[in-house]
Length: 374
Image (cartoon, rainbow, N blue to C red; front, side, top):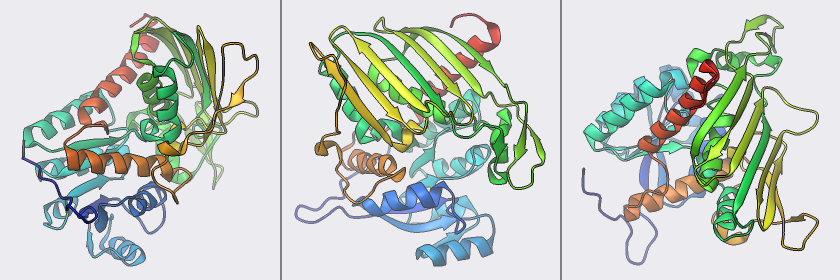
């Protein structure tokens, strides 16, 4: 492993690390909506390079965002001396081909979640990272959201006492009756970007961070809408990705867990996560099942209290004023990553954790396919 030295001066701010984003487009996308405002909010990063699919699109993006280095080849970006951190922000089926040269450069690599289209590919990328001694991070930013960290601490501090059970219901927003043309690839399970891996996967990672992993589980999944429509044209589209996911099991601490995610949106509940214990209850609610966006409220009651009351997230969990919306959790993940790089810690999960989370999702898929507990 390459020895990393501190870049902080004794009296000044952090020396900025040069960031290159693979897949930052002038036409929008998560790179623009999530990563760009997050990087701008965190001290110690400087956007210096990007890649896009064509020279013309790379030039347009570089001009729009004021980025000096523009490439079409991720390997050229990774090889540049001014780039210290490579952020992979492309569709999941392209992760392996874009992450591989970044890892081979030995530089720090942050990949959006899911890391790969399946468990085997994730294991391959994690092994490659180990061989090249590259520091890695994966965008499971729900665990960095101020509200999720607050819930974790409330539980650890005994707010609910011993956790007896947890129940979660959520809607994916996507994977409903209509899918935009730009998101049509999400309908194909083989692409690895599904209801199971994205909204359910992000939320499940936060749940296990707060409550622990599964000792045993059973699952049922289904594709209840095998034919959906393309929003812009009305054309039919085959959907093979599951649009119903139900998981029940026992957590390692003994609590009983029940989770159900649905494709599309509900006229009723789109996010409700209850944590019930011997001394109290917590309830997390929101308008989207994408917990990683951090847009939810927390309520609780304990002891002799019979009614829930709002539990605002204390300001100490919000270290980055001025950034909100879906980019807030991403920004806090970047702040944690900058500290990890500076201090040699590992708060932000890397590719090894990503493999473990892919393994849990694979376990759910196997339980659903076999009808047996895993």
